[in-house]
Amino acid sequence: MDVPGQTPAVGQLGFRGIRTVRRPPRNLIDQLAEYAPPDLSDAMNAAHTIDPRIRPLYPLRQRVAGPAVTVAVPRGAFNIIKFGMQQTHPGDVMVINAWGICAFAVWGGNVSKGMQRRGVAAAVIDGAARDPEEAENVGFPVFARAQATATPPLDGPGEVNVPVACGGVVVNPGDIIVADANGIVAIPPAAAAWVLRQVTELKQRHAKLQAILERGEVTGIDAIVDSLGKQGFAVDGEGTARR
Image (cartoon, rainbow, N blue to C red; front, top):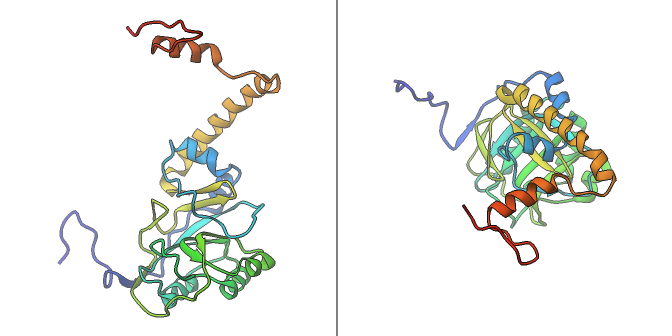
């Protein structure tokens, strides 16, 4: 019997796989992909911004964007990750919560090749990966908290396509991941149109500052000095008492 106000349980908590992902329209993803993750982060007031310690496994020059297929493996169960791989569609981004474990890699060169051939856009891992040269050779972007050498256990608990934690952010299946060498954001599809409006306005404001920057001047300095003075900041030994 379902309890009113609560989400009905689906399968066994901690050991289940869901094959359905509600993916946002591709044109919405492509519009967000036009903006760098730092700008998207600013537009969201730093919300939904993944820990910057999750970084490209090899030097990356491209930006990737796609809906999340999520995996959680508290003990690194590779077979659960492979079940998650089977649920991907072209353009998806795999988001794996490996609990930040860095003693072994939950991702390697063979799966980089397989997922690149499958059309998956990238893998984002709160844990460790390995074989950066192989990933780079096939052009498959991998973002991970660390690089490790050992292989993971095959079996153990895990979940696929449920909300997961990744780099301090809750990522839901279908959230729009935008990632490049500057960082990673996970945008809820319901907020995507709002984020687009915010980031467009942000870029317009930045554009207006370019002439000032080209002159080598500090933007907004007069207002900054005035504000500092009201806080009691002393310039050349003289300051204004706080009111």
